[in-house]
Amino acid sequence: MFIRIVILFGRSEWKVDYYSLLEKINREEAAALEGDWSSFCEGNEYTDQGHDFSNDIDLFGERSLFNYLDRTVTEQGSSTLAGWLRK
Image (cartoon, rainbow, N blue to C red):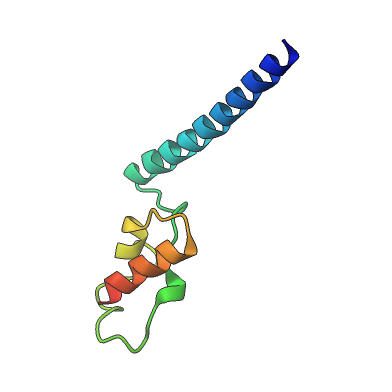
């Protein structure tokens, strides 16, 4: 019986974490729909001053295309998206 309770607790703990993260994602997306993009990365570290027109079309920074599109979770994902936008 004890082992069964431990197994059930392990499963429920995973569900709590899963639903907490799902709630966070939905809360951030709802805030974005209201115009609050502060919880998303602005991508300032990817700004390339040598790029011909990246500053003109606001690729990176506050309220930029990168800020609106980026939903990546890893550094590699953010870097890949930034590379695609620079091309």
